[in-house]
Each structure stands twice: as structure tokens, then as C-alpha cells.
Image (cartoon, rainbow, N blue to C red; front, top):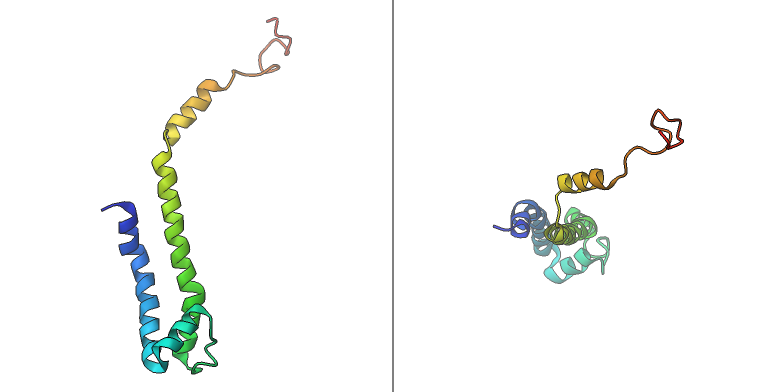
Length: 116
């Protein structure tokens, strides 16, 4: 199983199930169309029933859905960057150490004159 499907099942799955559960409970209580409108923020929970289920659905619509979308997008971007990375961290550190010049002027015993 790839990284994205794994993440969707084990990390994003619980968030998605929470959104779906809130939508189903609210849909049964106030109707599916009103629940959809509350979930997307088209209609306020107060105007569509003003019960606990609509307020929970509104919070889920404001917090849960954007976090799920942002997490999936972030995971896809991170996977794309990782796939294109050519060198590991240790290889980069070794390259930097090889490329850096030795100690600069004044670090030796010659007083920085360089005539040593």
C-alpha cells in the first residue's frame, strides 16, 4: 500500500467518518438539504433547526472538512517533494563538509598573515 492510500485509510479515515457521522445525524434530524447547507456554511445552524446536531455539523464543516482537505494536500505535496529528493540528509551534510573551505584567516598560529 502506498503512502497516500495508507494515510487516507488510517489517518484521514477517522476524520472522514466523523464528518460523515455528523452529516448523517443532522440529515436525519433536519433533512439532507439543510444539512448540506449547514455543512458548507451556506445556512447557519440557528436558522436550520438550532439543535446540537446542527451546531456540531457547522463546527465540523468549519474545522473538520478544511483540515481533511489541507492534510491530504499537504501529504501529496510532501510525497512529491520526497520522491524528487535526490540526496539523503547525510549525503547533503557530507557534501557541505567537503565543499566548505578549511579554517579561515586568523584561526591558525600565524596571526592571520597567511605566510605561515
